[in-house]
Image 1 (cartoon, one colour):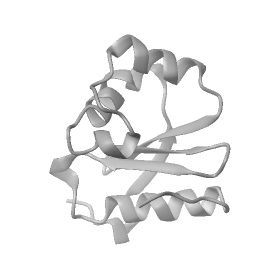
Image 2: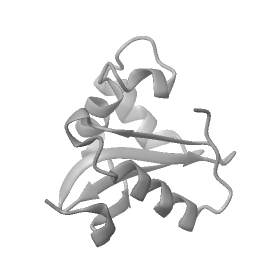
Image 3: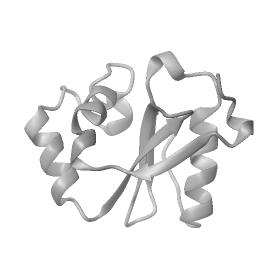
Length: 111
């Protein structure tokens, strides 16, 4: 398995084809609170968000070709990030945050 220090973690803009994956991440019970949602989102709601929200720069986190999570930066600089439970604890989120900071110098989040 690729280690984040091997520079294998990449970010790419999400597309409409990523709707199902992003929904899986957002609707994971342990991730929902980070997206400030109390209930699972519906497919059409997430698809509409990906298609129409220009104030959020959504990214897919990939490691060695696998989608492991998602992140993004709002126009305000606030970012969100979530990694699927089976990929947590491996440094992927840390590597993704570094990539976000490299790209968007002024980012912040509530922890």
